[in-house]
Image (cartoon, rainbow, N blue to C red; front, top):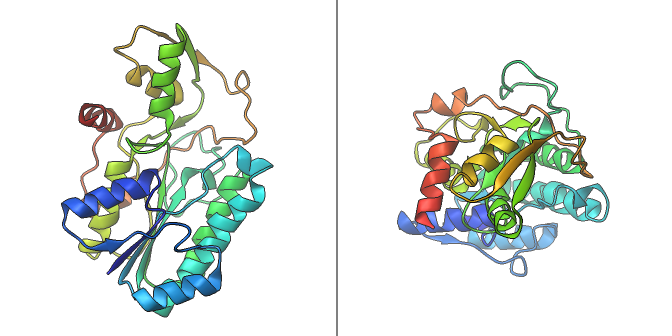
Length: 278
């Protein structure tokens, strides 16, 4: 049996639809049915279900709120919840897949790409909590995949694509940060690699998975709105202050994933396919 946490979220929803397509049975409990922050209930639930694989998609992702009002919940879900899931996975000898983030890096690497061995140094509370979750997986689980991703978008839930489309309908001009570089990630591509790793018995460890090619948020927005009657204008991070500091250059090296044989589409192709599906 397969267990999916966070099954109603942006990634969890994508993963569930993929598993349905593959005709693979799974259980995706709600947060009321499985409170990942309660160690005792997590252990009881997992020991009763005894899954062979746990796709741990549950996460707190309000990056700016995590700096103040959401700081405690961010830590509780992303760190404590992951500790509990890692311990439970080890207890029943399950494979656990944990989704991390490019925000574990400080973005000071302006030449080249972050490898899976690169030094971590998160700049914000969200990144710190997700890195703590990584360490929990490594400390308590023996069979694990830690998949760092970035700039996630998809057709389920709120994300940058829908925000840009909404703003384009409301304003003749949208302004977008043009000095932060990274790689967008379609939830479908991420879900496909998650299942690919398990089904193909890929070596356990840390992986970086985003769509191929790099861009700025401004480039991403321009592609999203290329057919809309709206002006997309670049601005600097200083002109668009946010509570949480974002890494300026968080391009992650994808070579480890590519070495497994998994084919990664470009973010442009991924975006177009997602929009066509919608």
